[in-house]
Length: 447
Image 1 (cartoon, rainbow, N blue to C red):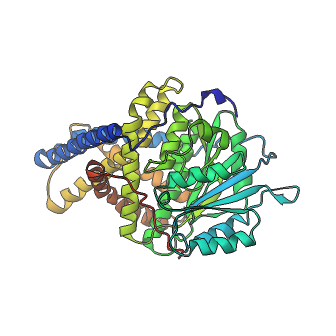
Image 2 (image 1 turned 120 degrees about the vertical axis):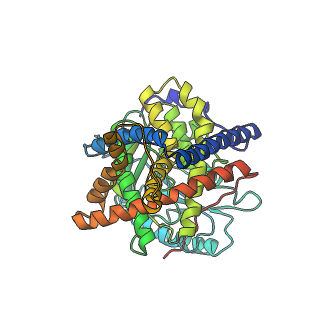
Image 3 (image 1 turned 60 degrees about the vertical axis):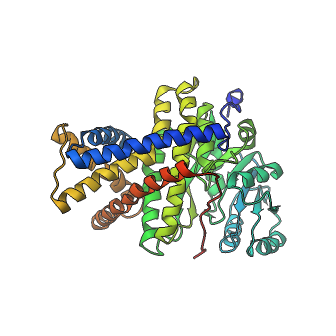
C-alpha cells in the first residue's frame, strides 16, 4: 500500500452544517420538481423520448458492466502476511443478534503462533434492552472481546459516532466493521485482508448475502438483490477500477487511512457511502473480495424494507449534492472514474427511471394508453431489456442454474424493484422537510 501522502481531510464535510443542508434541500427540490414534470409530461403527451434516452445510456453501461463482471479479477500475490486486525461492531438494542454475531467472530481462522491475531470491539451505543447484560457474559467468555459503552446524552446519535469511539480504543492497524446481525465465514479475514497489501488499495468490501433468505419471499428477494449486485455491479466495477463501494457490513480499511480522512463522518445518514466517496476522491482504490461471504439479516416485512430503502435513498441523494462539485474538480482521479462515481451516487435515481419505464408499460397494457418515443425501435427494445441480462447472469452464478428457476426469480425480482418508485419520492420529500437527522437504524429480529 503506497501513496499515503494523497490522503487528506480535504473532503471532510459536516452534513449538519446549515449551509450544506440548505443547498441539499434546494437541489433535491429541483430534481424532484423536474422528475414530477417529466412524468406528468409523459402521461399527458404520450411522448417518453426523454426517458428512453436515459434508458439507452443505462443499457450501454449495464452491458459493459455485465460483460466485464464475467472476467477474472486481479488477486493479491501476498497472502501469507497476517497483521493484527480490529473488528468493530456498533450495537444499539441488538439483544436478538449480538451473541450470535460475537460467537460467529470466534470461529474466524486467523491465527499467528497458535493465537488469534484479531480483537473484537463491540460498541454498546446506549442500549436499553438486554444487550449490555449479554455483552457482559460474552466478555467473560471470550478473551479477544472488548466492550465499549456509550451513554446518554452522547449515545444514539448515529453509527458514525459509535464507530469512531471504537476506532479510538482499537489496537489493530487493519479495521473491519460488522453490523450486529453479521455472520462470517471462518476464512473471512485470511481471504479479505491480503487485498490491502496491493498498491493503492485503501478499502475492501467482501460479498454480502442474507442468512435468512429462506424465511419468506421478501427475504429471498433481498438475497437475490445482493447476490446480483455483488456478482455483477461490484465485481464489474472492481475489474474496471471504477467506483467499487464499501457497505455498512464487512467493510475493511486501515487505521492509517481512517485517521488521514478524519474517520467516519458522524452526521452522515449512510456513513459507509460517505467513507467510500472520501477514499475515491483521495485517489485510492476500493477492491471487491468475492472469495468470502458476510451474511446479514434481511428485513422480513415490507414496512421495514421501505423504511430501510428510504434511508439509503436519502444517503445517496444527499451525498450526490454534497460531493458533486468535489468530484468534478478532483485532480487525482481519471475522468472515467469521476463518471462512475456519479453513476454510483445516482444509482438509486437511475433504478427509479428504469422501473418507471416498466410502470409506463404496465399502464399502457392495463389502460390501453399509448406511449411513443422518437428513438428507433431497436434502441427502445434494447433499453427495455437491458435490465435482465445482469439479473439472469447474477442469479445463474450465485443462486440457481436451473432455467425455470432463473426465469421465475427474474420475473419476481423485476416486480420487486418497482418499490424504488415510491421510495425515491418519499426520500426526496423527507430530505426537503427534514429539520434534524436521527439514527434510523434497521431493527434486527434474530429469526
